[in-house]
Image (cartoon, rainbow, N blue to C red):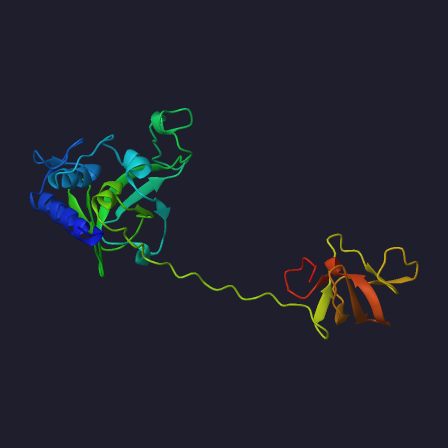
Length: 253
């Protein structure tokens, strides 16, 4: 059975629980007319004939039952059958992470978010997130559902590996490379004028000073020194770390 077929079975069981219009109760899994948020997922898994082996809780699910937990604010990253979670960060109002997930706790894994609510993506276009709150609810916007992942038990039940929805990665613009004729700005963290020398060496006693912010022209770029034209000096040298052609003001080209 493919992962897509496993997910279809899972969502069918979610819909079956939703159709019973269960009352909210912790912990409920839809088997007795009651359900809570993580119980909706657990109940669907049990109706598939699979076994939920861990704690009845969304914090357990986030840490132990998901193949990969990721944060996103892009609804296009959400896939059919994904578990989605809302979370409080430490210090936020409503934060109540149980001690077993905190540092020193039995299930501490470095993640201190309190995943307080869980649901599942039952449709992607348009988006539908089904979850049990005070009643069975369907959200059509991502909102605070900022975390998502795939249920490990569904992935293990499939004969193939699910392909995640690719997230386009913007191609960074290449930084300007200093060449002959490039314009550069003299920079220095202390704001003081920078020495330019007749020869590419700090031992060269013959030097002049160039104020920060002065524009110069690169005659010959180099790893440590660049030959420049600027002010009253033509063809003298300045250390590359004091020259900025990138525009970030940090020098070294």
